[in-house]
Length: 140
Length: 171
Image: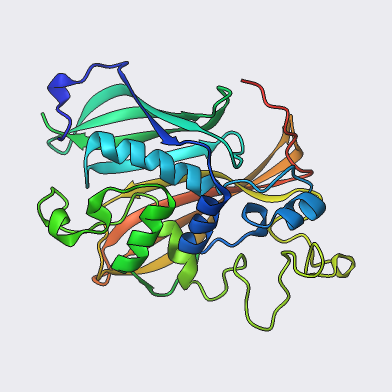
């Protein structure tokens, strides 16, 4: 299951669809689990009439969480060492997101092999919604 | 986030994993998880964000007896002329999450009891193309376990926008 440094090539990309037609209900689930009940994410009346957005939109952290599934499915359980992102565009109900990890380098760190990935998530229009990096321990 | 005590609970991890669409059994099935490299149930990478649940003062949670800015009878439950309407998403734009970074020193598991300590970081400004003046502010949160060991370092960046983000997207 685990990735092997000897099988990885710099520049290689792994992609996974992390949500297809994002539902408002999933955003509600995330609000409930994370504890972030900002009405911008679940309250259409407030968001359109008071905040001035066309609709509720996903928590940035939901996009980071969904993208995290692509990474942990790829690198394996309990292998992640670093994960960081910038939110570059909002994610709205109905969006379909594809997340990808591209190998940047493999480094030696404390006697271990650590793979460094560029991470990117794009929506159905090809607009990047998240840009970041991940580092994970890999087998030699 | 300032959770004095953040107990890591299996049910909470299961709900959190479901909410991000992650059906990996390592997040809810102990028998399966024992046989993985994790050695038992662990939390997904962004789970500590939910320490907000254990922060008594977290401002994005309705509190008993206090006004809430979401809609009820009216589009917002606060009197905006009283100057309390801008928290978290006022008519002019409000606060959004710009960046989040995690460093994992070990993977947390049910039974851990974490303490979060947050320190403010840098602040900076720039002119945004789609939302006017942007004011960024950084905070660094250290999560320590019941033995005082650092388990996760989190760095977040929030941004306040002058007006709502323009929705014209460029691919």
